[in-house]
Image (cartoon, rainbow over all chains, first blue to last red):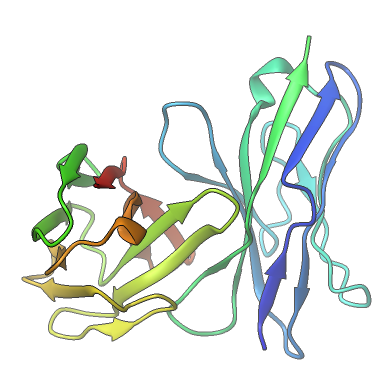
Length: 108
Length: 112
């Protein structure tokens, strides 16, 4: 079955420390991968997609097909990074499958 | 350009009552979606509509119905609300070229 796993429900990191939010998936094909973010009192929005290989707000994510992972990373956490993060996959159809989310808290 | 709008923002229902959540988008997107967000469960797809006139079940469709009224509007109906339907409901539309979904602000529904 196609599945997206975010193993950490909660993650706390000190300001200035590196951040890594984990995402693993199970799918035999080549999915399209995304990270969505929901800041407090804001709507869910796209942070980045693996196809564009871009860096947004200092975050990057690399697709590792061997480990079936798409971890989100940032070298130096900032307080404004505190939010709920969702990994999401498109398996070549109309739908997105979301992980259960990780709430990131940056400690000042 | 309002993007995706949802009404109402908040609603409290008694068990057995019915209601319709409204969603509209002004971005001329073909595909629209309804999700529910529950703690520890992430976002789960209830129903989606790939184009005007079509609807399909998602992961958790039981207890819900949808109507794609036109290209702009996609409503979600609870015919007989149950406490298990207490959740935050999000509507989204999809921009085809970049496969990006745009979300509404959500409706917080409590069923007593």
